Length: 218
Image 1 (tube, helix red, strand yellow):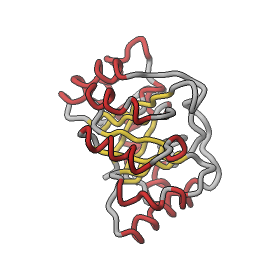
Image 2: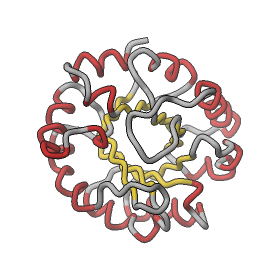
Image 3: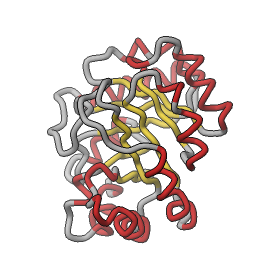
């Protein structure tokens, strides 16, 4: 069954704790936290203090804090995010001068490392590092803002990621982030996705539970 990870980037920031509580009660498996630094991507969003404020609520509900670092020099802040409560920390291949070293920091700090890549980046760029990750995050929009339309050819990128996983004999999860809605979620799952990040699809819906069930349905 698909893992659903609502992104709080689309939540009501004035009611963030309530939003997290509601979405986990509605069936969300993970809470996805999009961290942006104003450099790697233009916006600035969340820091370790927000992760720490949400960690107990998420963990008490049996959930996972899935932290996506869209930041430069991520190795400098990974320890703070893990201490704050991040269970998974994903960094961008485009942002890392030494990818293996950065992934090693995540694992040494006690979190599960993931590697993300943007739509223009060839999947072959992450291929040398697939044995080092617990998750590959395939971005299906250009990072920085929620609610964007999904990019063309996204299904084939997910399928190619699945192919690379099989060729490597690896077992990492494939996560998809960007433009995922109930009407196209089945295409992502059929192409090979294991984890669906959904922000506006969930938080802008009238019924979180129904939307989450719709994302899981094939």
